[in-house]
Amino acid sequence: MFKQFSDSTTNTIEVVLNGQAIQVTQGISVAAMILAQGLRFNRTTPVSNSKYAPFCMMGVCYDCLMVIDGKPNQRACSIRVKQGMKIDTQQGVGPALRTSVGG
Image (cartoon, rainbow, N blue to C red; front, side, top):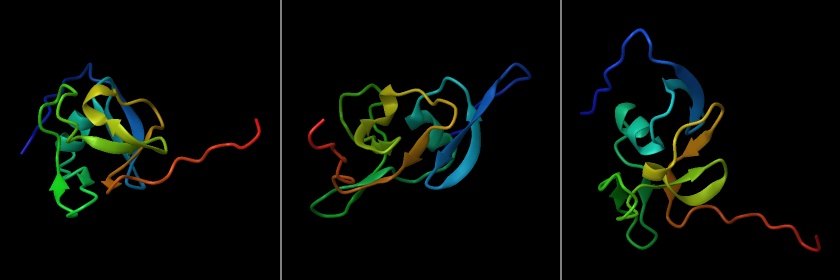
């Protein structure tokens, strides 16, 4: 559906998408990257388990929520890919955040 144009000056980096290491264009948003990779959805809803994909691409609709570097509910359209980033589709409200106690 989406195709990214590239040229000889395009730099790539490695990220981990749903447990698989892939090469992606440096500097694009996580949402653009998943669309270019052909990912059909990036999250499911907590109540009905419906599948959602990025929609507005500017951080207004919250349809692009993903787990990025272990943090759930990150707006993928507002975050640029970085070397070594770990990106996962989000199931419902996402995994619970770990908190430290007493310090």
